[in-house]
Image 1 (spheres, helix red, strand yellow):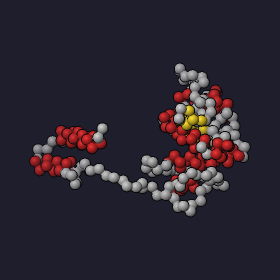
Image 2 (tube, helix red, strand yellow):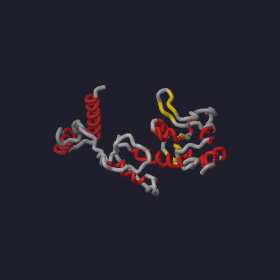
Image 3 (tube, rainbow, N blue to C red):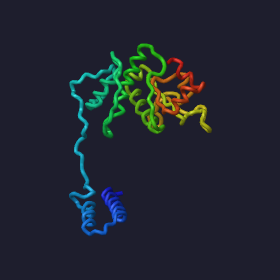
Image 4 (cartoon, rainbow, N blue to C red):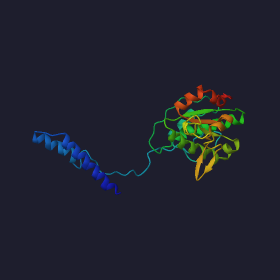
Length: 235
């Protein structure tokens, strides 16, 4: 499909809708309305635009990262500011809201502080779940599971420490009708070219992950259902 043709078709459809919806008896008002819609300079539809560079400002190359982890890229300024607030190294993390554009690395804003925290907790002998991340949709949790798994398994320090990420949603819930008792992955890895965390529920209850990915409804079940209590035994 040609984007220019698609854009023109959409314009024609919108134009047809507006002209059929708004009918003016006054000819001057009708002409003014037509100019508002169709004028190439001041009308409703604007031409194509090109963005020549990304608007996200990089952090200073002199900035000191508040992690024990090694970050394999130079962060954007908003990532660095988020890391300073969310880092648990020698201080308590601060509540933080990150609102930036698509492709700005919002996941990394909380991914690295959590993994860095889990690394120190593991080295100190702390067991059990250390972070819970709630998602509105299982598909988003599954996508983020891949991001976490890839980061952990490609970082020597995290992999050696045995950091585990678990995805605990109804997708692999044995309590759901028709679900297999042994569904999901029992370990982190890469299967058929895709990274994955631990998704088998029984395995996560047996050996709770460091980071738990779930949704608010499943978390409600996990806090109430007797069969899920082993998940919290170290907490």
